[in-house]
Image (tube, rainbow, N blue to C red; front, side, top):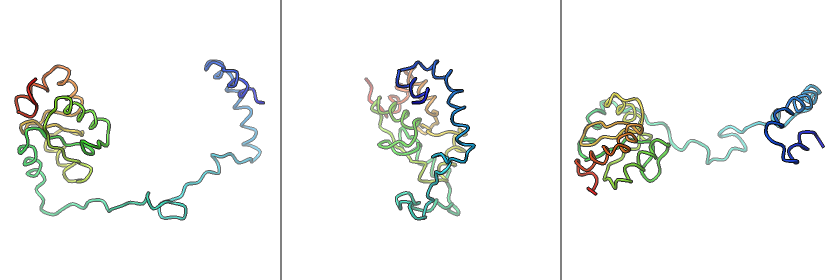
Length: 177
């Protein structure tokens, strides 16, 4: 039985294991030099479409193509002005696709806010357009009464200070409590 295995089975503390690492390196290096293949050296991965790759991992649809003559800024303006609160996020409120979008939705739901949501992952032009529209580089983005409020970090700060609840209540996007 190797020294490392004995230490692990004996419940050795991490500091003792770190001291034993040079022993492990001295034991593994000669094996690699003698041409013995390790699992890492022989590992290979199937590519999409090759034999052994599951069709579930193949792309389902082509990337969205830019539309000629589309006025993205007016589409975004219409979305943010037609709702009391609007959030542009990655994913949907029921299935957020990033931690920041998830946190933003949790904050809005905590206040029982009524809001519109747009999944920017489904439309490349809106995703890039909303960043230009607000002059803010990150997603999610929250708008209340047509005005840009901020991203997740700003929402968290406003929520902690109570200002977000006030903004949502004044916009009639959340019940007064």
